[in-house]
Length: 267
Length: 295
Image 1 (cartoon, each protein chain N blue to C red):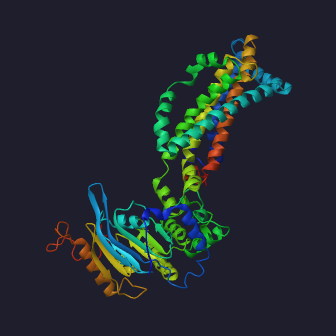
Image 2: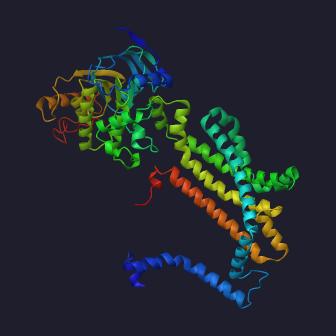
């Protein structure tokens, strides 16, 4: 142990440090696999990791899985486009015009406190259980994080910069494009990352209630046939898609905020 | 002489700005030709914020191409006067007239903080508000004038405070202003950078011939740069002193020091004598001339 702390730059010490976080997950997987093989863990409760991998492989080779992934992703993105687009537009509106804020903002603040999932019974009554219901749920869920962060982003733009830009002859759209929008961007992107997280949660719930295609359909179908390995593949897919969305949002942040000292690449 | 009187708030509407911008194109080259400064006339200018009277009855004439420095204690109204001229405050009473052939916008402000847009690279910051195909070329030229040509593609965040102010100066000068308003632009810089910047401003002023109005805390800076030093006290012009020294001025010069001390003494001397430094039993003997920051 003493050598690990004395020279952290030593290659072997660094390798240990970078591998150490993976030790526990690997140990859990290994003991899970062992427990399943030894028969301590029923496949009805939890299939062995190896079986999950095999199911993943079989489903992706047959192409079935990709269809479901495509359906779910299309739903998620459509919901994000509708809800996020509205949130962005209204956030820009209330952020930029006092009158719009007075008119709309307190209503949004009240509605914001209703959890989107609490609307499910109403949504089923209104739209039945088809696509519209799922899109509506996702759209309502992603609307608020994007709306709120856009609004605050616009309001937080440094008034000194706006004054400077005005005194240099910028007005109207030019002022918006060169000063206000870029100034609000960090906050808007934070809203987008929140929205992406919520988007998958809402979609999972919506698809679990009822669907004729998609990852949720695949897992619920598998549940009826006690295919726990397929259920786990579905859960894994949701996790991977969520991670992918977050990675993309981070990449967007790094690109869009490359001027920001907080986002400079480490030297 | 045709005096154009206008509401200062009208200075900054975009269409006129663009027009002047096109007129000024290429002016960097012919800048040295004739004095292009705007004469400024203020008559009975006053301003109140609520019940507080910040400026009252300011009468002031500034000649074309003149360099005027305004000193005074914090809160004396000197910055308000500059902001009124710039159209950044809604006008109070009185008249502000800028002479010229209807050119309402040959005026640029340099602020205390550089106010660069952090999301634009240095060159694009300088080109802000410029239009036309040669906008970037002109911005590059202005950047070279302040000695920062090689930083054109850096983000403002990586520049030092002095470099940022130089970029801000380039951004103001690229419009070939006829009146440059400087609102304590060097206040936050270290002593060496400040002297460097003062020389740069003086050199560019001499080359381009604009009228300059500098608001500063630093009496030494005012004496080093200005043709005339004004003291504003309780919202009025309390002192209007010519600086007869030839340029380039040396701070070591005896007359420089004498003038600086006289103005500083006048700044520190309040009518009620409340904040006058102790004279008889001075704990810091004869340090008054070294205390150039008359805050």
